[in-house]
Image 1 (cartoon, rainbow, N blue to C red):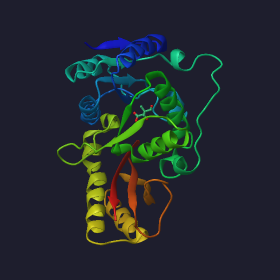
Image 2: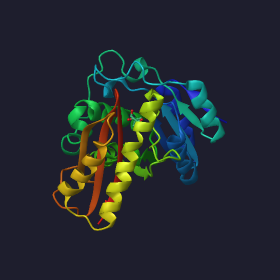
Image 3: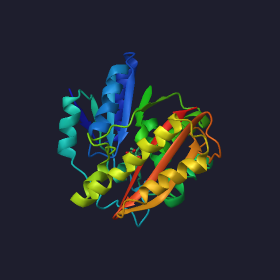
Image 4: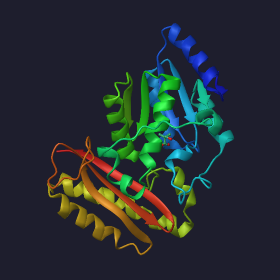
Length: 282
Ligand code: PAF
């Protein structure tokens, strides 16, 4: 039976009971407004663990003052229904005061992987993500935690954090879930007007095109990114933030594609910033 829990104390007490019985815990951290992408993470967590916890917390610390914290879509009732339908055991739904009480002043600040790609245009973002995910891990104490490849840099950053800080948690990356026309599922797709929704297809088209080029043997990062940029520029409503090829583990720029590479794009469609990517092992 699904239980919604608002306090750290209660979450810990229930999870401790599970752990004392030797049950494993899978964890899906989210900011709510759940969609098929989240559901795929929940299903994977269900497959691999005895109990599944989903957290719903729109984390103010990962938004800059000029970003969309206030208008970030929220629908707790719909989220609860989705969790119920997918046999989630606990929703952890804390308030801001519960997570960041007065006097809060400790942060997880990563260099390297968190400073590139989205880290350039969203300088405080990964500090907020690492801090909240660290706190959530300490509260939920999961055996495994599930993150979508749609936020590939976040996945790489979290893997690094867990390794660097010796957290005994397996990080499971799950494939990007797309709409039938290719657009990667994202809570932010809700911001798009009808014409923007059509224009947003340029992201997935460009990702598929880049992937094909790599599959056909392209190994020069600049040539690849230039082809992809030129394709995005054919869409008048699109404004490129970045198109880059990086090493997936270090998130550092590469000249030649080798090992496991992440080719990632961020593009504004109107005021909405969307991301997409592919990962390829050469
Ligand atoms: O990917 C997200 O929804 C968020 O960045 C996360 C991991 C829940 C942290 O707030």
